[in-house]
Image (cartoon, rainbow, N blue to C red):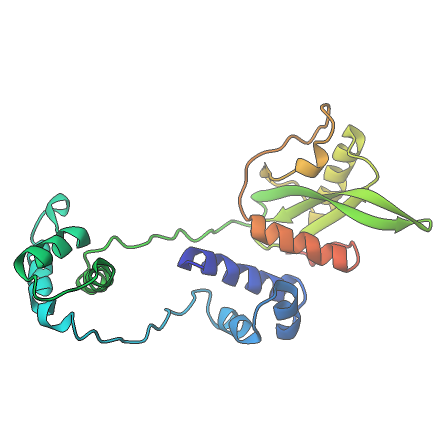
Length: 243
C-alpha cells in the first residue's frame, strides 16, 4: 500500500468512525484492519512515516564516498543531467571492478541518498475540501432484501453530502424514471435543500436497461462508496446522521 492509498484509508476510517459504526472495534471489524491502525487514523489524518530498519552493507561501504560525491555534484546540475542509479552503477563497475556489487543494492542506496539530499520529486497530495450545501454525490447499488417473506433484489439510490459525509438511502424495486425523480425529491427534503452541484458516480447497477435514467459516469472514492454500501446492507437501510 503506497502513501496515497493509506491517506485514503485513513479518511475512510475517520468517516466510518464519525458517521458509521462509531467504535474503534467496530471500524476495525468493518474495514478488516487492526485497531491500532484505527487509533492512528483518529489521532491524525496523515499516516505516520514508515520506519525502515537501517541495514549496513559491507560491500557498499568502500564506494559510498564515491556515490555521495556524484550526488553532491547533482545538486548543482540541471535535472536532466543528473546521474541515474544505473549510470552510477555503470561507473562503479568501470572504475572499481574490485568491489562486486549488485545493481539493486546500488539503486536502493542511491534512492535513499537522493531522498535525503532533496533530489527526488516530492509526492503531492491535494486535500479535498467542500463547502456545506454546495456539492452532493449520487450513487447506487443493488441490495438483496426480504419483502413479504421473499428474497428480492432492490435498487438503492444514495445521495451523499461531500462536506459532511452524511448519506441518504432509499430503495426501489426497479430503476425507473419515476423512482429516479422520487428519490431526488426525498433526498432534497432530507438534506433540507438542493445542492448546487450533483456528481453522479458509479451507477452501473441502475444501467441494466438501455432506457435507464441513471447513466454510468466515472468517479472516485470507490473504496469509500463500497464500504458505505456494505455497511448499509449489513445493517438497516436507513439514512445516516445529518451533516
